[in-house]
Amino acid sequence: MLDAFCTAPLWECNQTLINVAQGKQPADIVIRHTTLVNVLTHELLEDADIALSCGRVAYVGFAGNTAQHCIGDQTQVIDAHGTYAAPAFMDAHIHVESAMIPPSEYACAVVPHGTSAILWDPHEAMNVAGIPALKQLIANAHEVPLKCMITPGSCIPAVPGFEDTGSSINADEIRELMALPNVVGLGEMMNDPGILSGDFQTLAKVNETLKSGKTVTGHFTMPDHDQALNAYAAAGISNCHESTRVEDMIAKLRLGMYGFMREGSAWHNLQELSQAITAYHIDPRMICLVSDDMHPEMLVSQGHLDRLLRMAVANGIDPITALQMVTINVAQCFGLDRDMGSLTPGKCADIVLLEDLESFNVVQTFIDGALVAKQGEALFSPPHFTWEDFMLNTMRINMPITKETFAISASESARTTQQATVRVIASESGSTLTAEEIHHLPVHNNHIECDPEHDILKAFVFERHHHTNSYAYGFVRGFGIHGALAQTVAHDAHNLLVVGDNDEDMARAANELIACGGGEIAVCDGEILGKVELPLLGLMSDKNVHEVAKEVAQMEHAWQTMGCSMASPFMTMGTPFPCMYS
Image (cartoon, rainbow, N blue to C red; front, top):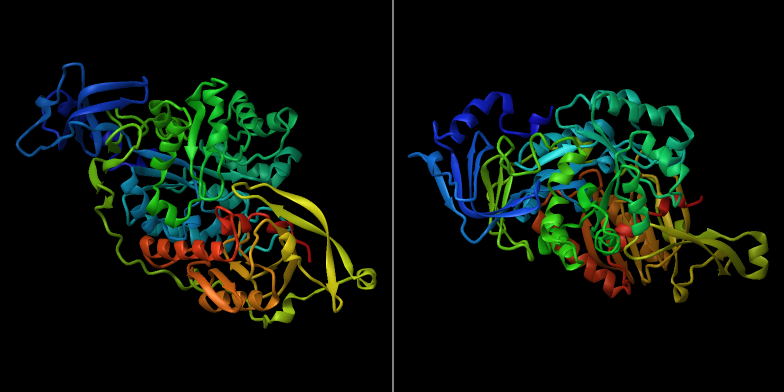
Protein backbone atom coordinates (compact mmCIF):
# COMPACT_ATOMS: atom_id res chain seq x y z
CA MET A 1 0.00 0.00 0.00
CA LEU A 2 2.70 2.50 0.92
CA ASP A 3 4.45 2.01 -2.38
CA ALA A 4 1.45 3.52 -4.15
CA PHE A 5 3.21 6.85 -3.60
CA CYS A 6 6.53 5.82 -5.19
CA THR A 7 7.55 5.50 -8.82
CA ALA A 8 8.34 1.83 -8.22
CA PRO A 9 7.89 -0.41 -5.18
CA LEU A 10 11.16 -1.32 -3.50
CA TRP A 11 10.78 -5.02 -4.25
CA GLU A 12 10.75 -4.24 -7.98
CA CYS A 13 13.85 -2.07 -8.02
CA ASN A 14 16.08 -3.06 -5.11
CA GLN A 15 18.33 -5.12 -7.39
CA THR A 16 19.00 -1.99 -9.46
CA LEU A 17 19.66 0.03 -6.31
CA ILE A 18 22.10 -2.62 -5.09
CA ASN A 19 23.97 -2.43 -8.39
CA VAL A 20 24.07 1.38 -8.43
CA ALA A 21 25.32 1.56 -4.84
CA GLN A 22 28.27 -0.66 -5.78
CA GLY A 23 29.07 1.02 -9.08
CA LYS A 24 27.93 -1.95 -11.15
CA GLN A 25 25.25 0.14 -12.84
CA PRO A 26 25.14 3.90 -13.39
CA ALA A 27 22.75 6.11 -11.48
CA ASP A 28 20.08 8.22 -13.15
CA ILE A 29 21.05 11.34 -11.19
CA VAL A 30 23.91 12.18 -8.84
CA ILE A 31 23.68 15.24 -6.60
CA ARG A 32 27.19 16.25 -5.55
CA HIS A 33 28.94 18.38 -2.95
CA THR A 34 25.88 19.27 -0.87
CA THR A 35 25.54 19.38 2.88
CA LEU A 36 23.21 16.54 3.79
CA VAL A 37 20.73 17.08 6.62
CA ASN A 38 20.47 13.66 8.25
CA VAL A 39 17.17 13.79 10.11
CA LEU A 40 17.76 10.34 11.60
CA THR A 41 20.97 11.22 13.44
CA HIS A 42 20.43 14.98 13.75
CA GLU A 43 23.65 15.70 11.84
CA LEU A 44 24.92 17.87 9.02
CA LEU A 45 27.11 15.78 6.71
CA GLU A 46 29.31 18.06 4.63
CA ASP A 47 30.38 17.51 1.03
CA ALA A 48 27.91 14.68 0.56
CA ASP A 49 26.87 12.93 -2.66
CA ILE A 50 23.47 11.33 -3.32
CA ALA A 51 22.93 8.88 -6.18
CA LEU A 52 19.38 8.30 -7.44
CA SER A 53 17.86 5.51 -9.50
CA CYS A 54 14.30 4.25 -10.09
CA GLY A 55 13.01 7.32 -8.26
CA ARG A 56 14.79 6.26 -5.07
CA VAL A 57 18.03 6.89 -3.23
CA ALA A 58 20.62 4.26 -4.13
CA TYR A 59 23.74 5.62 -2.43
CA VAL A 60 24.72 8.33 0.03
CA GLY A 61 28.41 9.23 0.26
CA PHE A 62 30.04 11.38 2.96
CA ALA A 63 33.18 11.54 5.12
CA GLY A 64 35.39 11.30 2.05
CA ASN A 65 33.26 8.75 0.21
CA THR A 66 31.83 9.99 -3.07
CA ALA A 67 29.33 8.86 -5.70
CA GLN A 68 31.90 9.02 -8.49
CA HIS A 69 31.55 5.27 -9.00
CA CYS A 70 27.81 5.73 -9.65
CA ILE A 71 28.31 8.11 -12.60
CA GLY A 72 27.96 6.81 -16.14
CA ASP A 73 27.75 8.41 -19.56
CA GLN A 74 24.00 9.05 -19.23
CA THR A 75 24.00 10.07 -15.56
CA GLN A 76 22.80 13.59 -14.85
CA VAL A 77 25.25 15.22 -12.44
CA ILE A 78 24.06 18.17 -10.34
CA ASP A 79 26.67 20.26 -8.55
CA ALA A 80 24.83 21.31 -5.39
CA HIS A 81 27.77 23.00 -3.68
CA GLY A 82 26.58 25.61 -1.20
CA THR A 83 23.18 24.01 -0.66
CA TYR A 84 21.67 21.85 2.05
CA ALA A 85 19.94 18.65 0.94
CA ALA A 86 17.03 17.54 3.13
CA PRO A 87 14.09 15.23 2.70
CA ALA A 88 11.28 17.12 0.98
CA PHE A 89 8.59 18.34 3.33
CA MET A 90 5.46 16.49 4.46
CA ASP A 91 2.41 18.26 5.91
CA ALA A 92 0.88 15.94 8.51
CA HIS A 93 -2.54 17.62 8.51
CA ILE A 94 -4.07 19.77 5.78
CA HIS A 95 -7.42 20.57 4.20
CA VAL A 96 -6.68 21.42 0.57
CA GLU A 97 -10.17 22.86 0.11
CA SER A 98 -9.34 25.67 2.54
CA ALA A 99 -6.89 26.97 -0.06
CA MET A 100 -9.92 27.38 -2.37
CA ILE A 101 -8.27 25.42 -5.17
CA PRO A 102 -8.33 21.75 -6.21
CA PRO A 103 -5.30 19.54 -5.49
CA SER A 104 -3.74 19.99 -8.93
CA GLU A 105 -3.49 23.75 -8.39
CA TYR A 106 -2.55 23.27 -4.76
CA ALA A 107 0.47 21.28 -5.94
CA CYS A 108 1.55 24.21 -8.11
CA ALA A 109 1.50 26.39 -4.99
CA VAL A 110 3.31 24.18 -2.48
CA VAL A 111 5.77 22.00 -4.44
CA PRO A 112 8.00 25.02 -5.29
CA HIS A 113 8.20 25.62 -1.52
CA GLY A 114 9.64 22.16 -0.94
CA THR A 115 6.51 20.14 -0.14
CA SER A 116 6.41 16.67 -1.66
CA ALA A 117 3.58 15.09 0.33
CA ILE A 118 0.45 16.08 2.22
CA LEU A 119 -1.71 14.11 4.62
CA TRP A 120 -4.99 15.48 3.36
CA ASP A 121 -8.31 15.28 5.17
CA PRO A 122 -10.91 16.15 2.48
CA HIS A 123 -13.83 16.29 4.88
CA GLU A 124 -14.83 19.70 3.53
CA ALA A 125 -15.56 18.30 0.08
CA MET A 126 -17.02 15.12 1.53
CA ASN A 127 -19.46 17.06 3.72
CA VAL A 128 -20.83 18.65 0.55
CA ALA A 129 -20.88 15.68 -1.85
CA GLY A 130 -19.56 12.60 -0.09
CA ILE A 131 -17.44 9.84 -1.61
CA PRO A 132 -18.14 10.86 -5.24
CA ALA A 133 -16.50 14.21 -4.52
CA LEU A 134 -13.54 12.47 -2.90
CA LYS A 135 -13.04 10.27 -5.96
CA GLN A 136 -13.18 13.29 -8.28
CA LEU A 137 -10.52 15.06 -6.22
CA ILE A 138 -8.31 11.96 -6.15
CA ALA A 139 -8.53 11.79 -9.95
CA ASN A 140 -7.55 15.45 -10.15
CA ALA A 141 -4.62 14.87 -7.77
CA HIS A 142 -3.26 12.15 -10.05
CA GLU A 143 -2.44 14.85 -12.60
CA VAL A 144 0.43 16.28 -10.51
CA PRO A 145 3.57 14.94 -8.75
CA LEU A 146 2.52 16.04 -5.24
CA LYS A 147 1.86 12.97 -3.10
CA CYS A 148 -1.70 13.51 -1.93
CA MET A 149 -2.19 10.99 0.85
CA ILE A 150 -5.82 10.80 1.89
CA THR A 151 -7.29 10.52 5.38
CA PRO A 152 -11.04 10.47 4.55
CA GLY A 153 -13.40 12.45 6.73
CA SER A 154 -14.42 10.55 9.83
CA CYS A 155 -17.17 12.88 11.01
CA ILE A 156 -19.58 13.57 8.18
CA PRO A 157 -21.62 15.22 9.49
CA ALA A 158 -19.42 16.57 12.27
CA VAL A 159 -22.32 16.51 14.75
CA PRO A 160 -24.86 13.81 13.79
CA GLY A 161 -28.47 14.94 14.01
CA PHE A 162 -27.49 18.59 14.39
CA GLU A 163 -25.86 19.81 11.19
CA ASP A 164 -27.38 19.98 7.71
CA THR A 165 -24.65 18.57 5.47
CA GLY A 166 -24.78 17.44 1.88
CA SER A 167 -23.70 13.90 2.67
CA SER A 168 -22.98 11.38 5.41
CA ILE A 169 -20.40 8.59 5.79
CA ASN A 170 -20.83 5.39 7.78
CA ALA A 171 -18.45 2.69 9.01
CA ASP A 172 -19.13 0.38 6.04
CA GLU A 173 -18.06 3.15 3.67
CA ILE A 174 -14.95 3.83 5.76
CA ARG A 175 -14.03 0.15 5.41
CA GLU A 176 -14.32 0.43 1.61
CA LEU A 177 -12.28 3.64 1.55
CA MET A 178 -9.48 2.04 3.56
CA ALA A 179 -8.90 -0.32 0.61
CA LEU A 180 -8.07 2.57 -1.75
CA PRO A 181 -4.32 2.86 -2.48
CA ASN A 182 -4.36 6.63 -1.86
CA VAL A 183 -5.81 6.27 1.64
CA VAL A 184 -3.36 6.13 4.57
CA GLY A 185 -5.62 6.74 7.54
CA LEU A 186 -8.81 8.24 8.93
CA GLY A 187 -9.49 11.96 9.02
CA GLU A 188 -9.60 13.90 12.26
CA MET A 189 -11.90 12.27 14.79
CA MET A 190 -13.59 15.39 16.11
CA ASN A 191 -16.46 13.48 17.69
CA ASP A 192 -14.68 13.08 21.00
CA PRO A 193 -17.99 12.81 22.89
CA GLY A 194 -18.84 9.84 20.66
CA ILE A 195 -15.50 8.20 21.45
CA LEU A 196 -15.82 8.74 25.19
CA SER A 197 -19.40 7.48 25.29
CA GLY A 198 -18.54 4.40 23.26
CA ASP A 199 -20.95 5.31 20.45
CA PHE A 200 -21.16 2.26 18.19
CA GLN A 201 -20.95 4.00 14.81
CA THR A 202 -18.14 6.33 15.90
CA LEU A 203 -16.01 3.50 17.23
CA ALA A 204 -16.83 1.36 14.20
CA LYS A 205 -15.16 3.95 11.92
CA VAL A 206 -12.08 3.94 14.12
CA ASN A 207 -12.02 0.17 14.24
CA GLU A 208 -12.32 -0.27 10.48
CA THR A 209 -9.26 1.96 10.16
CA LEU A 210 -7.32 0.04 12.80
CA LYS A 211 -8.21 -3.27 11.14
CA SER A 212 -6.65 -1.97 7.93
CA GLY A 213 -3.42 -1.13 9.78
CA LYS A 214 -3.78 2.58 9.11
CA THR A 215 -3.58 5.70 11.26
CA VAL A 216 -6.49 7.36 13.02
CA THR A 217 -5.95 11.12 13.23
CA GLY A 218 -7.33 13.15 16.09
CA HIS A 219 -9.10 16.34 17.12
CA PHE A 220 -9.31 16.62 20.90
CA THR A 221 -10.18 20.01 22.40
CA MET A 222 -11.32 19.09 25.90
CA PRO A 223 -9.30 20.55 28.81
CA ASP A 224 -9.39 17.17 30.63
CA HIS A 225 -5.84 15.74 30.61
CA ASP A 226 -6.80 12.78 32.77
CA GLN A 227 -9.61 10.30 32.18
CA ALA A 228 -11.02 11.80 28.98
CA LEU A 229 -7.67 12.15 27.25
CA ASN A 230 -6.57 8.68 28.34
CA ALA A 231 -9.80 7.22 26.98
CA TYR A 232 -9.45 9.10 23.69
CA ALA A 233 -5.87 7.85 23.21
CA ALA A 234 -6.86 4.32 24.23
CA ALA A 235 -9.34 4.25 21.36
CA GLY A 236 -6.37 4.12 18.99
CA ILE A 237 -6.20 7.78 17.95
CA SER A 238 -2.58 8.61 17.21
CA ASN A 239 -2.25 12.38 17.02
CA CYS A 240 -3.94 15.74 17.50
CA HIS A 241 -3.59 19.15 15.85
CA GLU A 242 -6.01 21.02 18.15
CA SER A 243 -3.69 21.94 21.02
CA THR A 244 -3.73 25.68 21.63
CA ARG A 245 -1.86 25.66 24.95
CA VAL A 246 1.55 24.11 25.51
CA GLU A 247 0.26 22.10 28.46
CA ASP A 248 -2.38 20.49 26.21
CA MET A 249 0.19 19.26 23.71
CA ILE A 250 2.57 18.02 26.40
CA ALA A 251 -0.26 16.03 27.99
CA LYS A 252 -0.98 14.33 24.66
CA LEU A 253 2.71 13.60 24.04
CA ARG A 254 3.02 12.01 27.47
CA LEU A 255 0.17 9.64 26.62
CA GLY A 256 1.77 8.53 23.36
CA MET A 257 -0.02 10.80 20.89
CA TYR A 258 1.86 12.79 18.27
CA GLY A 259 1.55 16.52 18.90
CA PHE A 260 0.92 18.69 15.86
CA MET A 261 2.03 22.33 16.09
CA ARG A 262 -0.38 24.23 13.87
CA GLU A 263 0.21 27.53 12.09
CA GLY A 264 -2.19 28.38 9.27
CA SER A 265 -3.97 31.44 7.97
CA ALA A 266 -6.35 31.73 10.91
CA TRP A 267 -5.03 29.42 13.62
CA HIS A 268 -1.78 30.67 15.16
CA ASN A 269 -0.48 28.14 17.67
CA LEU A 270 3.19 27.63 16.80
CA GLN A 271 4.65 30.31 19.06
CA GLU A 272 2.83 29.00 22.12
CA LEU A 273 3.42 25.32 21.40
CA SER A 274 7.11 25.73 20.54
CA GLN A 275 7.68 26.19 24.27
CA ALA A 276 7.25 22.44 24.68
CA ILE A 277 10.72 22.16 23.15
CA THR A 278 12.38 25.44 24.13
CA ALA A 279 11.09 25.84 27.69
CA TYR A 280 10.00 22.36 28.79
CA HIS A 281 12.71 20.49 26.84
CA ILE A 282 10.30 17.80 25.64
CA ASP A 283 11.81 15.29 23.21
CA PRO A 284 10.57 16.53 19.81
CA ARG A 285 10.56 13.18 17.99
CA MET A 286 6.74 12.98 18.22
CA ILE A 287 6.05 16.58 17.21
CA CYS A 288 5.10 17.67 13.69
CA LEU A 289 4.54 21.06 12.08
CA VAL A 290 1.20 21.32 10.25
CA SER A 291 -0.62 24.04 8.37
CA ASP A 292 -4.21 22.69 8.67
CA ASP A 293 -5.88 25.53 6.72
CA MET A 294 -4.05 28.07 4.55
CA HIS A 295 -5.47 30.62 2.16
CA PRO A 296 -4.02 30.84 -1.36
CA GLU A 297 -2.55 34.31 -1.02
CA MET A 298 -0.50 33.12 1.97
CA LEU A 299 0.76 30.09 0.03
CA VAL A 300 1.80 32.28 -2.89
CA SER A 301 3.31 35.18 -0.95
CA GLN A 302 4.72 33.50 2.17
CA GLY A 303 5.07 29.82 1.41
CA HIS A 304 3.89 26.58 2.94
CA LEU A 305 5.94 24.44 5.33
CA ASP A 306 9.04 26.51 4.58
CA ARG A 307 7.18 29.37 6.26
CA LEU A 308 6.54 27.22 9.33
CA LEU A 309 10.20 26.20 9.42
CA ARG A 310 11.26 29.84 9.46
CA MET A 311 8.83 30.53 12.28
CA ALA A 312 9.98 27.50 14.26
CA VAL A 313 13.62 28.60 14.08
CA ALA A 314 12.64 32.19 14.96
CA ASN A 315 10.95 30.77 18.07
CA GLY A 316 14.12 29.05 19.22
CA ILE A 317 13.82 25.58 17.72
CA ASP A 318 16.99 24.06 16.28
CA PRO A 319 16.84 23.97 12.41
CA ILE A 320 17.48 20.22 12.15
CA THR A 321 14.83 19.55 14.79
CA ALA A 322 12.42 21.72 12.82
CA LEU A 323 13.19 19.74 9.66
CA GLN A 324 12.55 16.50 11.52
CA MET A 325 9.08 17.83 12.30
CA VAL A 326 8.17 18.03 8.60
CA THR A 327 9.97 14.86 7.48
CA ILE A 328 10.84 11.79 9.51
CA ASN A 329 8.42 12.55 12.37
CA VAL A 330 5.53 12.78 9.91
CA ALA A 331 6.58 9.61 8.09
CA GLN A 332 6.82 7.67 11.34
CA CYS A 333 3.50 9.00 12.60
CA PHE A 334 1.72 7.53 9.57
CA GLY A 335 3.86 4.43 9.13
CA LEU A 336 5.36 5.79 5.92
CA ASP A 337 8.99 5.77 7.03
CA ARG A 338 9.81 2.58 5.10
CA ASP A 339 9.62 4.71 1.97
CA MET A 340 9.77 8.36 3.03
CA GLY A 341 11.01 10.86 5.55
CA SER A 342 14.81 10.52 5.23
CA LEU A 343 17.52 10.65 2.58
CA THR A 344 18.82 7.13 3.01
CA PRO A 345 19.30 4.18 0.62
CA GLY A 346 16.07 2.63 -0.59
CA LYS A 347 13.86 5.60 0.27
CA CYS A 348 11.94 7.65 -2.27
CA ALA A 349 14.08 10.40 -3.73
CA ASP A 350 11.92 13.22 -2.38
CA ILE A 351 14.57 15.87 -1.91
CA VAL A 352 14.71 19.60 -1.33
CA LEU A 353 17.86 21.68 -1.88
CA LEU A 354 17.92 24.69 0.44
CA GLU A 355 19.97 27.88 0.40
CA ASP A 356 20.38 27.80 4.18
CA LEU A 357 18.77 26.56 7.39
CA GLU A 358 17.40 29.93 8.46
CA SER A 359 15.41 31.27 5.53
CA PHE A 360 14.80 27.75 4.15
CA ASN A 361 14.65 29.23 0.67
CA VAL A 362 14.09 26.36 -1.74
CA VAL A 363 16.45 26.05 -4.70
CA GLN A 364 15.11 22.82 -6.18
CA THR A 365 12.48 20.22 -5.32
CA PHE A 366 12.68 16.58 -6.44
CA ILE A 367 9.83 14.10 -6.10
CA ASP A 368 10.67 10.46 -6.83
CA GLY A 369 13.95 11.62 -8.35
CA ALA A 370 12.33 14.01 -10.83
CA LEU A 371 13.07 17.73 -10.68
CA VAL A 372 9.61 19.24 -10.27
CA ALA A 373 10.33 22.81 -9.10
CA LYS A 374 13.22 25.25 -9.35
CA GLN A 375 13.78 28.70 -7.87
CA GLY A 376 10.19 29.06 -6.75
CA GLU A 377 8.55 27.89 -9.97
CA ALA A 378 6.75 24.62 -10.63
CA LEU A 379 8.16 22.73 -13.62
CA PHE A 380 4.85 21.03 -14.29
CA SER A 381 1.47 22.31 -15.41
CA PRO A 382 -1.79 20.49 -14.61
CA PRO A 383 -3.75 19.49 -17.71
CA HIS A 384 -7.34 20.63 -18.11
CA PHE A 385 -9.62 18.62 -15.86
CA THR A 386 -13.30 18.09 -16.64
CA TRP A 387 -15.39 18.15 -13.48
CA GLU A 388 -18.65 16.24 -13.30
CA ASP A 389 -21.82 18.32 -13.00
CA PHE A 390 -22.49 17.39 -9.37
CA MET A 391 -19.28 19.19 -8.41
CA LEU A 392 -20.53 22.43 -9.97
CA ASN A 393 -24.17 22.69 -8.91
CA THR A 394 -24.38 22.71 -5.13
CA MET A 395 -26.24 25.95 -4.30
CA ARG A 396 -29.69 24.44 -3.82
CA ILE A 397 -31.48 27.46 -2.37
CA ASN A 398 -34.66 28.49 -4.19
CA MET A 399 -36.30 30.73 -1.58
CA PRO A 400 -36.36 34.49 -2.14
CA ILE A 401 -33.85 36.19 0.15
CA THR A 402 -34.66 39.83 0.82
CA LYS A 403 -33.77 42.30 3.52
CA GLU A 404 -36.94 41.17 5.34
CA THR A 405 -35.45 37.68 5.59
CA PHE A 406 -32.93 39.03 8.09
CA ALA A 407 -35.50 40.54 10.47
CA ILE A 408 -35.35 38.79 13.87
CA SER A 409 -38.62 38.93 15.80
CA ALA A 410 -38.49 39.92 19.45
CA SER A 411 -40.46 38.22 22.21
CA GLU A 412 -43.48 39.95 23.73
CA SER A 413 -41.54 40.88 26.84
CA ALA A 414 -38.65 42.30 24.77
CA ARG A 415 -41.10 44.34 22.72
CA THR A 416 -42.46 45.81 25.93
CA THR A 417 -39.06 46.70 27.37
CA GLN A 418 -37.55 47.58 23.97
CA GLN A 419 -34.59 45.41 24.91
CA ALA A 420 -33.75 41.75 24.23
CA THR A 421 -31.37 39.56 26.20
CA VAL A 422 -29.49 37.34 23.73
CA ARG A 423 -26.68 34.82 23.60
CA VAL A 424 -23.74 35.94 21.46
CA ILE A 425 -20.99 33.81 19.90
CA ALA A 426 -17.71 35.61 20.63
CA SER A 427 -14.81 34.89 18.27
CA GLU A 428 -11.15 35.77 18.63
CA SER A 429 -8.58 36.27 15.90
CA GLY A 430 -6.17 33.37 15.50
CA SER A 431 -8.20 30.85 17.48
CA THR A 432 -10.70 28.09 16.72
CA LEU A 433 -12.27 28.52 20.14
CA THR A 434 -15.39 30.62 20.75
CA ALA A 435 -17.15 31.76 23.88
CA GLU A 436 -20.78 32.34 24.84
CA GLU A 437 -21.62 35.86 26.01
CA ILE A 438 -24.89 37.40 27.17
CA HIS A 439 -25.76 40.86 25.84
CA HIS A 440 -28.73 43.21 25.78
CA LEU A 441 -29.75 44.42 22.32
CA PRO A 442 -32.22 47.11 21.25
CA VAL A 443 -35.67 46.23 19.90
CA HIS A 444 -37.13 48.40 17.14
CA ASN A 445 -40.46 47.82 15.36
CA ASN A 446 -40.79 44.50 17.20
CA HIS A 447 -37.45 43.21 15.87
CA ILE A 448 -34.10 42.68 17.57
CA GLU A 449 -31.40 44.92 16.13
CA CYS A 450 -27.68 44.30 16.11
CA ASP A 451 -25.36 46.66 18.00
CA PRO A 452 -22.48 47.70 15.71
CA GLU A 453 -21.16 50.14 18.30
CA HIS A 454 -20.33 47.17 20.52
CA ASP A 455 -19.43 44.90 17.58
CA ILE A 456 -22.51 42.67 17.90
CA LEU A 457 -23.68 41.64 14.45
CA LYS A 458 -26.39 39.44 12.99
CA ALA A 459 -25.42 36.04 11.65
CA PHE A 460 -27.54 33.78 9.44
CA VAL A 461 -26.97 30.25 8.13
CA PHE A 462 -28.97 29.04 5.09
CA GLU A 463 -29.11 25.30 4.33
CA ARG A 464 -27.86 24.91 0.75
CA HIS A 465 -27.67 21.19 0.06
CA HIS A 466 -31.21 19.76 -0.03
CA HIS A 467 -33.65 22.49 -1.19
CA THR A 468 -35.10 22.74 2.34
CA ASN A 469 -35.06 26.57 2.36
CA SER A 470 -34.42 26.40 6.09
CA TYR A 471 -32.18 28.78 7.97
CA ALA A 472 -30.94 29.64 11.44
CA TYR A 473 -29.80 32.88 13.00
CA GLY A 474 -28.09 34.45 15.95
CA PHE A 475 -25.56 37.09 16.94
CA VAL A 476 -21.76 37.20 16.84
CA ARG A 477 -19.03 39.44 18.16
CA GLY A 478 -15.40 39.90 17.09
CA PHE A 479 -15.58 40.87 13.42
CA GLY A 480 -15.92 44.63 13.77
CA ILE A 481 -17.28 45.26 10.29
CA HIS A 482 -19.71 47.70 8.72
CA GLY A 483 -21.49 45.94 5.87
CA ALA A 484 -21.85 42.22 5.29
CA LEU A 485 -19.62 39.18 4.76
CA ALA A 486 -20.96 35.96 3.25
CA GLN A 487 -19.43 32.62 2.39
CA THR A 488 -20.14 29.00 1.57
CA VAL A 489 -16.84 27.79 3.06
CA ALA A 490 -18.01 26.94 6.55
CA HIS A 491 -16.58 24.12 8.61
CA ASP A 492 -17.98 21.61 8.46
CA ALA A 493 -21.45 21.65 6.93
CA HIS A 494 -20.57 24.37 4.39
CA ASN A 495 -23.92 26.05 4.26
CA LEU A 496 -24.36 29.69 3.26
CA LEU A 497 -23.23 31.99 6.09
CA VAL A 498 -23.98 35.71 6.25
CA VAL A 499 -22.71 38.16 8.89
CA GLY A 500 -23.49 41.84 8.88
CA ASP A 501 -24.71 44.99 10.58
CA ASN A 502 -27.51 45.79 8.12
CA ASP A 503 -30.12 43.72 6.34
CA GLU A 504 -29.72 45.28 2.89
CA ASP A 505 -26.04 44.38 2.54
CA MET A 506 -26.69 40.92 3.98
CA ALA A 507 -29.38 40.22 1.38
CA ARG A 508 -27.20 41.31 -1.51
CA ALA A 509 -24.24 39.25 -0.28
CA ALA A 510 -26.39 36.13 0.01
CA ASN A 511 -27.98 36.48 -3.42
CA GLU A 512 -24.66 37.15 -5.15
CA LEU A 513 -23.22 33.88 -3.84
CA ILE A 514 -26.31 31.88 -4.74
CA ALA A 515 -26.07 33.21 -8.30
CA CYS A 516 -22.38 32.36 -8.79
CA GLY A 517 -22.41 28.89 -7.22
CA GLY A 518 -20.81 29.80 -3.92
CA GLY A 519 -17.71 31.52 -2.64
CA GLU A 520 -16.86 34.53 -0.48
CA ILE A 521 -18.05 38.11 -0.75
CA ALA A 522 -17.79 41.45 1.05
CA VAL A 523 -20.54 44.07 0.59
CA CYS A 524 -20.62 47.55 2.11
CA ASP A 525 -23.39 50.10 1.58
CA GLY A 526 -24.62 48.16 -1.44
CA GLU A 527 -21.21 47.98 -3.11
CA ILE A 528 -19.28 44.73 -3.68
CA LEU A 529 -15.79 45.37 -2.30
CA GLY A 530 -14.46 41.88 -2.93
CA LYS A 531 -15.63 38.55 -4.29
CA VAL A 532 -14.13 35.10 -4.77
CA GLU A 533 -16.27 32.75 -6.84
CA LEU A 534 -15.91 29.09 -5.80
CA PRO A 535 -18.07 27.03 -8.17
CA LEU A 536 -16.50 23.65 -7.23
CA LEU A 537 -18.71 22.46 -4.37
CA GLY A 538 -18.95 26.08 -3.22
CA LEU A 539 -15.44 25.52 -1.83
CA MET A 540 -12.91 25.77 -4.65
CA SER A 541 -12.21 27.91 -7.69
CA ASP A 542 -11.61 26.63 -11.21
CA LYS A 543 -8.94 29.31 -11.73
CA ASN A 544 -5.22 28.99 -11.17
CA VAL A 545 -3.74 29.60 -7.74
CA HIS A 546 -2.24 32.99 -8.62
CA GLU A 547 -5.59 34.35 -9.84
CA VAL A 548 -7.35 33.09 -6.74
CA ALA A 549 -4.61 34.52 -4.54
CA LYS A 550 -5.18 37.97 -6.08
CA GLU A 551 -8.92 37.72 -5.47
CA VAL A 552 -8.39 36.68 -1.87
CA ALA A 553 -5.89 39.52 -1.37
CA GLN A 554 -8.59 41.90 -2.60
CA MET A 555 -10.95 40.34 -0.09
CA GLU A 556 -8.46 40.97 2.70
CA HIS A 557 -8.30 44.62 1.67
CA ALA A 558 -12.10 44.70 1.73
CA TRP A 559 -12.19 43.32 5.29
CA GLN A 560 -9.83 46.04 6.44
CA THR A 561 -11.84 48.71 4.64
CA MET A 562 -14.95 47.45 6.44
CA GLY A 563 -13.20 47.72 9.82
CA CYS A 564 -12.19 44.11 10.46
CA SER A 565 -8.89 43.55 12.23
CA MET A 566 -8.98 39.72 12.28
CA ALA A 567 -6.13 37.84 10.64
CA SER A 568 -8.55 35.73 8.60
CA PRO A 569 -12.20 36.57 9.30
CA PHE A 570 -13.64 34.15 6.74
CA MET A 571 -11.75 31.24 8.30
CA THR A 572 -12.86 32.30 11.79
CA MET A 573 -16.39 33.02 10.62
CA GLY A 574 -16.82 29.48 9.34
CA THR A 575 -15.99 27.81 12.65
CA PRO A 576 -18.53 28.73 15.35
CA PHE A 577 -21.77 28.78 13.42
CA PRO A 578 -22.97 25.22 14.08
CA CYS A 579 -23.76 26.71 17.51
CA MET A 580 -26.54 28.85 15.99
CA TYR A 581 -30.17 28.57 16.98
CA SER A 582 -33.31 28.94 14.85
